[in-house]
Length: 226
Image 1 (cartoon, rainbow, N blue to C red):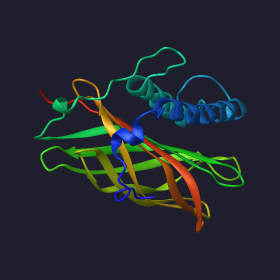
Image 2: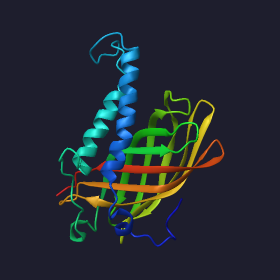
Image 3: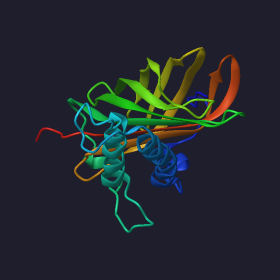
């Protein structure tokens, strides 16, 4: 659900919010699923196109490495990036934050867990946010691993005083459709600024026309020009 009029600041939404724990939990379930699918379907070793290794395994690995770099992992003692101080956020220029989006949809039959690529473009000079999230894959209500078509677009946002961005779009697989419309709120990370993380923990998604609770997290990294 869009939060622009709820008066919730980044500090309020992120204080005590375990971004890393949320993403790690979602990672674990999908990694186990991919491993089992690979064991059941692989005809040999290696990562060449004929090996039977699902390329989505490599994508999950890349997302997990990025999660560790940006958010860390308290259980394994890996430190994440600290919040960027206010003086460290540029006031000119722009930057693309490349990363991933992960969504958990609390479907009654079986929760859906999705992962996709994300690009968030921040215009520091204009204080605006745009971007896209696409190439999603994950589980469906039958527990199968599937690809989702469609794009979720970041169509508005703000950089100050808090980082937030509105998103909307639809994803489909087979006869099933997920419709999104909400607001992610988060923060810049690193000193110097190197990443962002944002979430909506009380997201509402339409799944085949029925309103369902969901959790939405986006993580991205950038390299700012000196």
